[in-house]
Image (cartoon, rainbow, N blue to C red; front, side, top):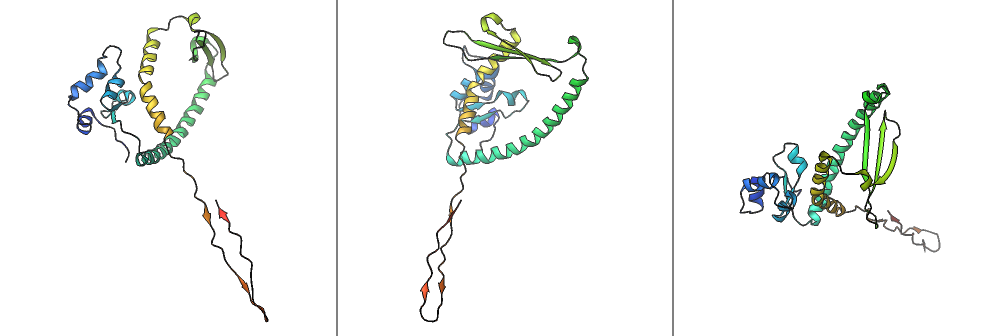
Length: 220
């Protein structure tokens, strides 16, 4: 059975918690020192999804339970349904991308009047302590121009980017749990089938000789 998303009130009942719903909601708005909301919910055996909360959904909690074969199979089936939905969503995205490319072709080559995309990629920190940074800039759907430098050369990020990175780091525990669940999905294998051997006999006038046994074939 697939784990359902729960409201704070439902989570208290399901997990037999002694805290109130107001206490759970306070975890979201009030950070206790360096402890994030995700970590506080995990301490109670709950999985907190910040994206569902931002989307305005009241049921943003799940029970953290060991993944059994039954739950893993159910998750696999549920994932199949979600993949089907995503495939339809992908078709819509393709249409939207095509429309965006047409808009890019119509935009003038004037910096202030066209859309410019900048992508900053923080690469893993090296043994020397330096963290390489790759910056790419593009426009009009054309190939990007790229440069590489160290994070120290880049300097401090603006407050908006710092806040965004903090939210990403706070969601790392949830992302790790989702990856662990995805890695436990069973791999379906086709069971080999065997063909029943058939013996044939050829009748002759004087003697009856049994035909040789047919070879057993495994069909995969």
